[in-house]
Image 1 (cartoon, helix red, strand yellow):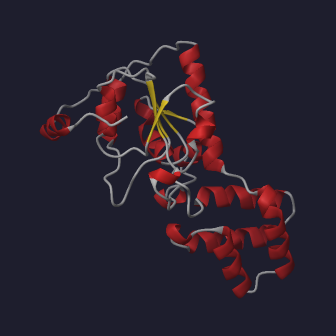
Image 2 (cartoon, rainbow, N blue to C red; image 1 turned 60 degrees about the horizontal axis):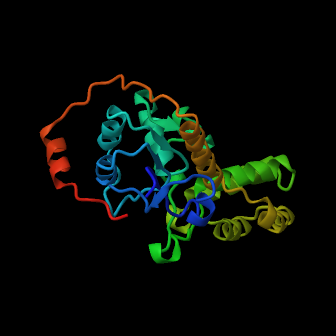
Image 3 (cartoon, one colour; image 1 turned 135 degrees about the vertical axis):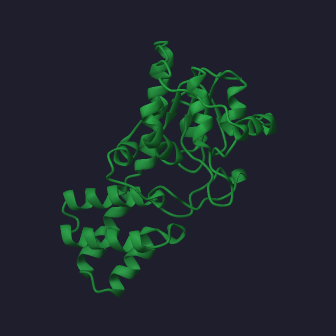
Length: 247
């Protein structure tokens, strides 16, 4: 078993992740998972995808616990980007454009990276489109003059107003047509989309895996944790309740 662990789900198929980094790939992270992984004394932890809503999300404090124990923690793309934006001052390493946008305040809403996905047995296939991917794709379409700046902005607004569970190019284009956006531009965008669509989340995930590989290949020093880790009663209970993670 690898001494490197990466929490991965719909953002990047394991078959595409494995050539990038020798790691044990685990399902999307949930509360308590990082605590359990720390017991394995890993060389590094990577977080891409994570559960939320119906399953408690990974706790900030368990990531701080890993950092305080000298375990490098990397994040990108989805839940990893969110937690890295919040915890990079404490040593978590954020990677990619999505992390940078959250870190710099250009993105704030969690729904920007949220998607609906299928079950583990099918490889967590994404069943909706992340808003961050739509933003990047529309920006490229405007830059390539597939659509005008105004049409791109209006398509972006239409997509953002959709619940994340219903977000997708087809739904946004149908609503845009109903609202009277230029039919020729919508048609041109639809024709361009199969080759022009950009998956920012997937790109960032690959960048994180490559960053982790470089860190491990060069045996980079782990930054000293410059914070005090407070062991509260709630934390002690979480440690007691942690059970071994199924690999």
